[in-house]
Image 1 (cartoon, rainbow, N blue to C red):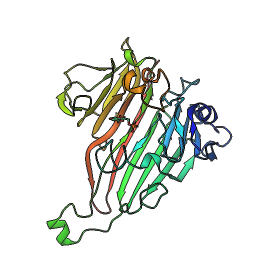
Image 2 (tube, rainbow, N blue to C red; image 1 turned 30 degrees about the horizontal axis):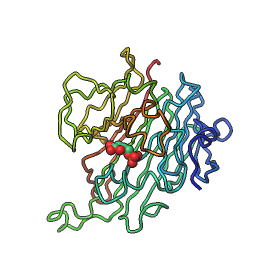
Image 3 (cartoon, rainbow, N blue to C red; image 1 turned 90 degrees about the vertical axis):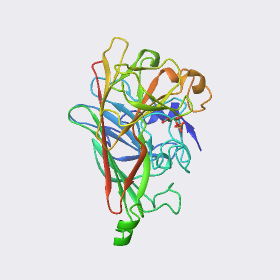
Length: 319
Ligand SMILES: O=P(O)(O)OC[C@H]1O[C@@H](O)[C@H](O)[C@@H](O)[C@@H]1O
């Protein structure tokens, strides 16, 4: 049965199970499984559900009382739902850009644990995993969530095309034969004191698709930060690899660092009006988060037996 967020958050808050059983799979009352992570030296905590490989909470050192990721009190914890908040893994389709449901199947599929320690877990999804549509071509995705020695949350993402090598004829005449073609995102929900007061810096001068304006292609004004007066839904192409979220006083709340394997960045907040129509957001939630997503909105092409790799590292500022 579907369970909503309040009870689930209480039960599986950041690092739930840490100390006793950090790095050990535990069962949530919804039936979903999760791990609590704990870094021995920093004391940082995180919670990672096997459903969707979903990080639902992260409490770095310095923010001991609460998660710095937003997860809604109205989030649904169920096999057929995506958890609203934390870090959904969008794969193999970003948003509605293809035949699958919004953001693809990975965020509703059951991942398996390949390796776990108290401070890190590696989860795997393949074409044979529960929740992956039958007939999906052979692939394997590996996702490592790690609390690092320097108090960061490091997310390492790798997608391998499981098909055989092309024949000579295919390689020459049909270079895309057997290629794995996908779009993706680590759709991070950053908790903020008030969305209307924060800014995303680093995207001035970058070309973006404005999804709130009929997919119009625009360029964000140079030297200008992004602010959140209402709905924002913008997919920035080939964005700089280092971005920051700052508060009204210009202090850094988060540093966001990607490797080039995440070429694009999506910035999203539904605004109050649209948020009010979303059943898994609670009243007032639109002001409590902004999403800055490490993404490939333009398709990635992975040839047979090859692996695409990307990393995202999140750090908090001094707030
Ligand atoms: O409601 P979902 O499926 O989690 O999607 C949330 C949002 O995710 C963003 O990445 C998209 O750009 C938005 O268009 C979308 O509304």
